Length: 85
Image 1 (cartoon, one colour):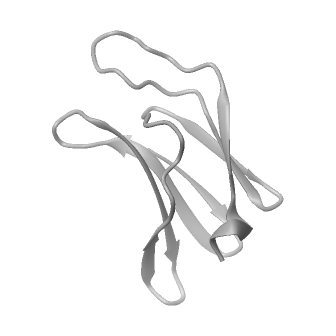
Image 2 (tube, rainbow, N blue to C red; image 1 turned 90 degrees about the vertical axis):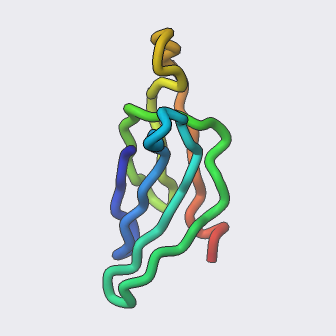
């Protein structure tokens, strides 16, 4: 899982479930309202990623989508935050 802050919200991206399945979740936490919101999934399920917020976009870099096979990603995916509002 990776996280980034943008516009006073925290975004949690991807992860790995307890049964070792990668996911493509994108969640937003509003600390003022104490509210979690499920956003549209990212294009690729992955874990062990990094992320950065630039302007109104969050970029997710690298990651892996396989427990056993070192299937590392070498591309980034972006999410435009204003599209969720």
